[in-house]
Image 1 (cartoon, rainbow, N blue to C red):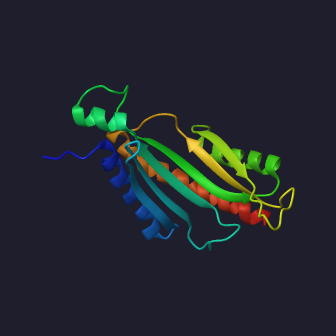
Image 2 (image 1 turned 30 degrees about the vertical axis):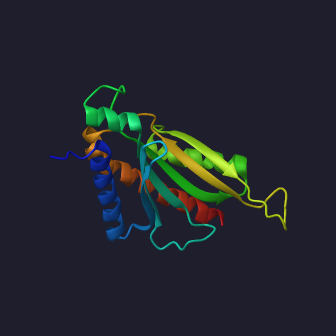
Length: 185
C-alpha cells in the first residue's frame, strides 16, 4: 500500500488549518501552489492570504507560508535509508508589505514580530525598489519589503499538533503588521 510522504501529511494538515481560518472569516486566501520541481526533485507548497476585509492595494499586507522538502528527504523516506540527518520538511513564513522609511520601519517590524513570536524564528527583511525605465525616481518613495521568518530546522509528523499554533501566530503577526501599516498611512 502507498504511504504518503511526510511532506504530504504535513501539507494536508497545514492547508486545512489555513482554510479553517479562511472559513472563520479571519483571512482571505489569495493564492496557493503545490509544485514538484523536476530539475531538483524538490517539493514546494505555498499558500498566501491577507487579513479579511483588506482590499488588495498598497497598504495590504500579504502572508505566505512555504513548506518544502528535498530529494534527499524524499529518497531517505522512500528507501528507508538514512540519507539525511533527519527526514522532514522546512517551513518558512513570508510577509509582503511596502515601507518608506527603511531603517525606522524595518526596526519596528522586527519588534512587532519578536513580540508575537518571542524571538524564536530568525527574521530577515529584503527591501527592494522598483525603477520604471520611463520614470526613474531616486530615492523612491516606497520600497517593497519581504519579511522572512525561518525556523532553521526540519519538521515531521511529530510536529503536526504545532501547526494550529503556528498558523495562529502567523495570522496574529499579519494582523499586527496590517495595523502598523494602517497607522502609518
